[in-house]
Length: 231
Image (cartoon, rainbow, N blue to C red; front, side, top):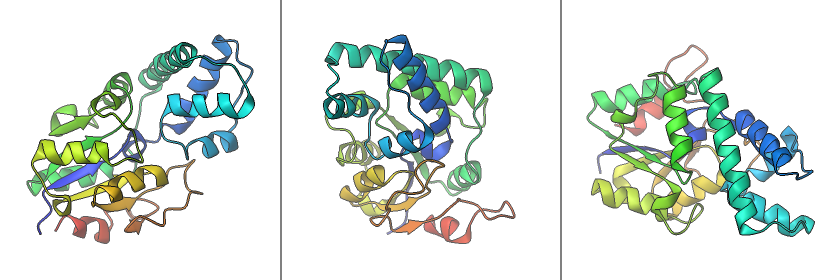
């Protein structure tokens, strides 16, 4: 069946922001008087758990730290504010091949989706920080954490996107950057390509249909096998 939608599944699939998020978490935790400080290796491990609030709750349980739901919400809200400020100040560059793949999809009449389970302020910050390199109006569907009851790896986010676009699962291709998010797309029956980020390259992407280091070659051209996914 012909591919009718290209679904980028997370902020990390379109732009490398992991270090910004880590910095923002550490600053938010310090603001809250929490003594955790996450280095790259620690944050890399934490990225195996989808969802910032879920990571905070998991660590609270694991370390015996008494964090209430209200405290977790406040820390996460502060982190989101800080990350947005950093992104807008420093700017965000799309990952290699992302803009080329978007342009190919548009030229071929293929709908674009942004199937995240992050929160609206994070999405706003990325589009604004990209300075026109990523355009909200190019996307026929943009999902947030507030749109679904269960976050990734549950398939809810992708199932909602397919329903919104009136598509069957074999009419879409997903691009993801974490193993948990790949699982979400595959549970929805979607052909999925993994492009690991700087802090997720050590994850096991066994469920992905294809794993590529980058969407483009070292010569700066869109990878043939990636372009062929769209037909």
